[in-house]
Length: 223
Image (tube, rainbow, N blue to C red; front, side):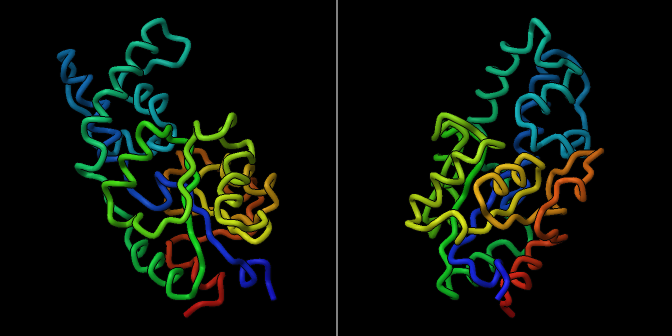
């Protein structure tokens, strides 16, 4: 039996893996451009950096890095804008609701481990019916360390009452795979997520790669 087929739970990254939040993240940043008299940018300009949160969105909107003197103030403005519109345009990726139902039907627990802070994660997951059966929701500030540290994944496994080796972790960023491997979990890289323009997914050394959410069921030996 493969490590995947023997799993008792699946843990997922949030943005870019379960949900497409790029429209709301991008809109929150674009709102800042428009407020300063700058032309609006199309969503596609923001999408590839959605996994980088405030750093990525501000980088696209203004070309500023974290060392720019205005970055911190812009970050707080971005947070306020995003908090006001968490789920206006955010939707599950195609196939995700069906995948989660299939996991539930097969008796597999599932949960979320994200680097998004609890300020955003908790109200977002509470507002979306998709997460009603999530057995664990761990945010970037739930534990003292965020991914790529394994602590959030180990905390999720603890909440599920499982050993980390009994959980699979699915994510669309290299830090997801690094964290999963460090926690001792089989890892799956999601090619359909926010990989960034220069991602070398093969170099991440994930245990498996899927190009759509449905690929997960095949790994688990489910129809």
